[in-house]
Image 1 (cartoon, rainbow, N blue to C red):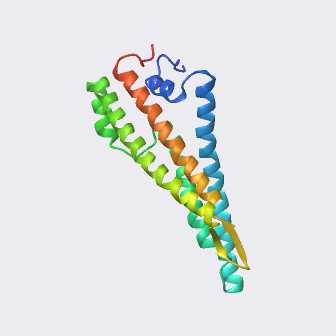
Image 2 (cartoon, rainbow, N blue to C red; image 1 turned 60 degrees about the vertical axis):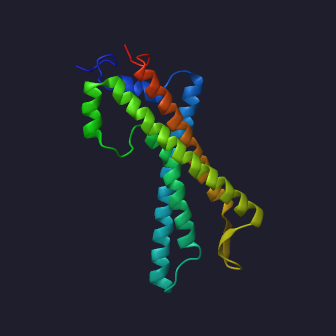
Image 3 (cartoon, one colour; image 1 turned 180 degrees about the horizontal axis):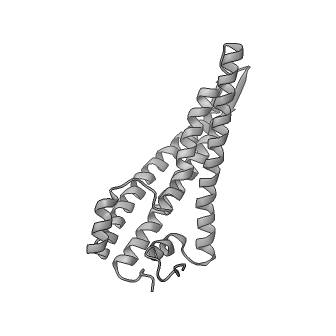
Length: 191
């Protein structure tokens, strides 16, 4: 016998994560789309690394730009997948304490999560602001990775995607804060 959403103990959390309405649906699509892009980039990074290993074995040398492109791609992947990690409550934390605290004081736990998410939003905001400066510098100076005359790539597209991921994650944290405050006030519980 399957459970209905009203009987599901995780239904309030699912409702908080998914939201309602077309704006929430579009936002969720953006957040999960960035996560999916990060997943695709993991595959691309694996192909790049494998190609470099093969090149090293057959030619004795590395392919151009592999280490630089790999490093920037890895950072991109982390930030592109961060917002969906936040939205689906997959950040590492001490769930043992939080689960027990939720049972004893759901409103207190919601307030604690609001503080946690607000702190995360502030930290991500600072990181995003510093990334804007780096992006401006890379774009104005024409920064690139690689070896001139062999292979180069501009760095600003990497930085732009990193900034997008950080910004979306910061906004997602603020959405989590609002949801936690609604639950703390008793308005965000599913019936």
